[in-house]
Amino acid sequence: MDKTDLFTVSELANRSGFAASAIRFYESQGLITASRTAGGQRRFERQMLRRLAFIRAARNVGLSLDEVAAALAKLPDGRTPTRADWTRLSKDWRARLDGQIAGLVALRDNLDSAGFVRWLRGDGEGMVVSMRSKARRWSGWVR
Image (cartoon, rainbow, N blue to C red; front, side):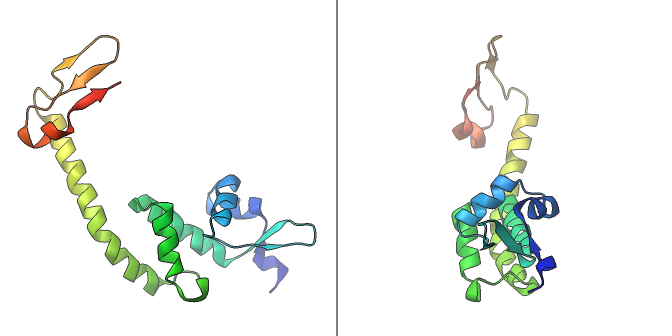
């Protein structure tokens, strides 16, 4: 492998948009891998950029790090996800997103309804109470 295909933590952070601390954390969790120089410095292969993009997309969908790790573990020999891998995995995540969207639409619709907040004290603490029967289970204290 050519040394130009290896990145330091800061180079990978700059290219991926992740903080260096996040990259070190993802490595500690086994989501990405690095080799070490004789001096112990991390060096990341170019393909880790694709793995980080995959991690970002999966986290944006709402997957936990455990779920991301499980998805990456399904890939043979820990390889970087391909377009075909993404297509297969994203089908599984579509239902999850549809559920999140439906929940957010219901929340938005309740916010638009008159009387959503029945009582709110002046100190910023109050009780959220929906006037719609579907959303009463969501009622609770807010601060």
